[in-house]
Length: 349
Image 1 (cartoon, one colour):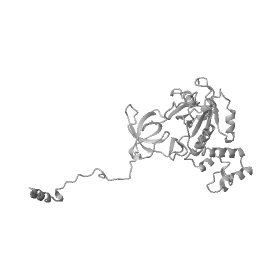
Image 2 (cartoon, helix red, strand yellow; image 1 turned 30 degrees about the vertical axis):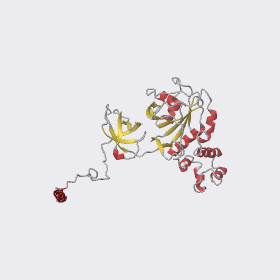
Image 3 (cartoon, rainbow, N blue to C red; image 1 turned 90 degrees about the vertical axis):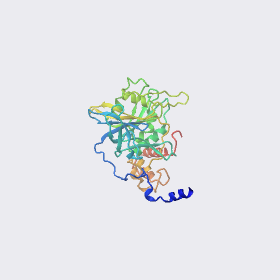
Image 4 (cartoon, rainbow, N blue to C red; image 1 turned 120 degrees about the horizontal axis):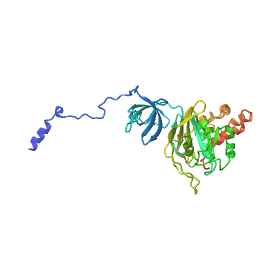
């Protein structure tokens, strides 16, 4: 029997062997991606666990929100709030409908931050925004100038216009804090009052926001979301109180959300506001010094004679001679160097 089995085993040849084709590689690979010429254009309003709420048919009678997911063909390319995207699939917006984001348009601005200054991974807060509103309370909690400086650096780095929004002016006058930023020529708005905003004069801030996409950033408890609720009352978000022990606010906004502002002014311009969660830190590991200098057009020509890789705060920096020659205000150089130093110092230093 043993010989018979051995003989039978040796009688097989390659024609008797069936090979199961592998699934991997059975389809020819191609770098060609579908064009999706019938894709709808949308604006990403919010992101929640891999689902994207997008606005399609914007500014038309058919305008509506849909839910979408990122298509596999995008690979590792991220999709963030503010992105202009191309969407295919079920864009009806009906309950249970799910579309696919297949393309992200080129971004005209990107606001970034890192978790801290040693973190090599930058996080995009929002894309395609025009303005960064840095919201800070004048009291309860106390203002943190270092954090304001860091937000200003991030705004300049992103190519966005900063707007200083000071809240709770009924508790402390704003002049002392405003004097710190006078040389920067920052636009600013001062608001008064607490949660009862029915009698607030919102015209000054509405004028600053009209026609723009503005990101609201500030640490917890400064009244950021309260202000957004006043500007867009039909989309109320939860607000919290300041901790009496730590003097810090509680996080009540847990995800960023884009809201349309009511039309304002003679031209009836609308706008968009992005309400973000309160920040405890604003890392600047990603910031390029060259982009910060461009926000100071009166000082930038003076850097032509600076040593290579000049930090603009060292003995050989050419900006000192530039200012001494009367080409720029010394207060502007002091402000620039304070902002650049914010990259090396924590907001609580």
